[in-house]
Amino acid sequence: MPGNFSFSTSMQVRITDINYGGHLGNDSLLSILHEARLQYLQNFGFSELDAGGAGLIMADVAIVYKGEGFQGDVLQIQIAAGELSSRGFALFYKITCQREDKNILIAEAQTTMLCFNYTTRKVISMPEKLREKLEK
Image (tube, helix red, strand yellow):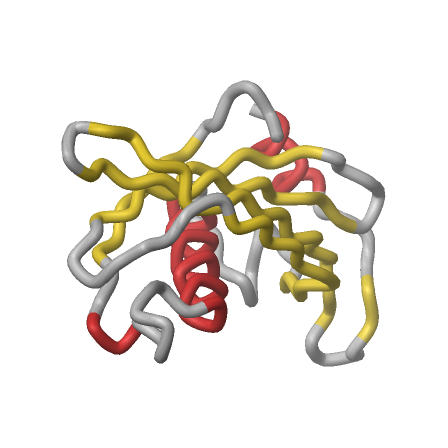
């Protein structure tokens, strides 16, 4: 995980995010990461369909669970970009929450995003405008 994160947002765990084990479900955490990624891109004036001239598609995701999240927890999701290539990049996520005056690490995650043309259905080169924003 990177030492510094350039973006942060928060989201509350909803009752619908809780699984039969009584904690934040893995499917819900993936949806929370998706929402955080959208907010990160919007911070640059981008979307997943137009990130500086390219669409984005997720090639893979890895999530390492470090603790449990519970209904009502306010998750702090930090994001940093890295591993830029000619056609894609990685986003790193650190998910924490404050509980009983303690900072609890819930999970760390990484998604690999590829630049994608949704008309031709092909991976394309990363636009310079996107690269500039991610490198900041």
